[in-house]
Image (cartoon, rainbow, N blue to C red):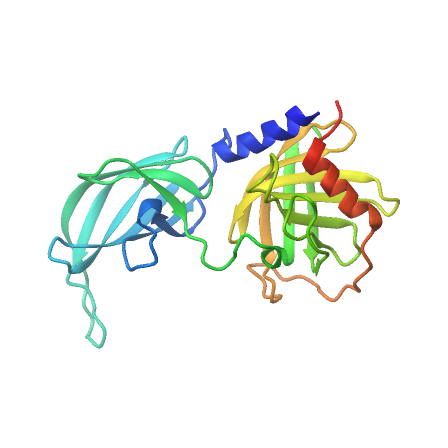
Amino acid sequence: MLKKIVATALLISAGLAHAFAPQAGTWVVSSELDGKPGRGLAIDVQNDTFVMQMYAYESSGQPTFYLASGKIANNQVSAALIRYSGGRYLGSGALSGKEAGNAGTANFRFTSGTTGFVTLPGEPEKAISRFNFGYPFAAPSLVGVWSLTSIGTDGLLSDAVQLATNLGPTSTGNGLVASPDGLFGCEHQISGNLAGSVLCVKINSQGQLQRSYLFTYSVNDGEGYSMRSSSGTQQMLSVRRLANPQGTGTGLVYKAGEPVAAEHPALRAHLSDVAAHGFAD
């Protein structure tokens, strides 16, 4: 039974073996993330079109930027890195930038929605990652409204849940955050085989385990697996934050204001049991 849950954790850490779109947002070269000004990447993917804007520097130290666009397939893309100059500056009149040369080809390969590698002209391949500057790996970052959708042999399943109350840490995590009715809870795992991921469990009012979720996420999006209690069948999982801890929507309108219920005594027990043992065959 432990093998299934460990295998899930290993699959997540290695990157899911299916096609996915890299998350739109600010990305960084991981080895250059030192808290000081440096290079950065703005990445977006719409349908199969990949666009990357890169802010960098000339050999003289002057700042510059590049644009690359191409078709992404099998989580990879190669595109010309085009430099621009002569555009509008602060306080100027109407000006249009012009291409100022092709720096070469940039090659990207993504290992998950938030991690990957880039090979820039004249440089070896380097790891890149989605830059997360607003959500630490801590219980308060889970507060908000979430949508969890899985697909597999159990069919297409979806849960929308508001996580509102920090019930304190379990033996493997740093704070179990539960829904107002106390029947759904999630926690960052900081020890054991699932360390580095988020584990959630859903129970019914009788305290019976209905489903568990295991995923990694960055900012508003995540990916992982869900499992049904009766069989342990794994389903691919897509996770989306619908509202942040302050109640501000991230793209959808929702109805808030549910009354807060006391912690269900089975919620913590089931989360700790899944974290330690997984599902029985």
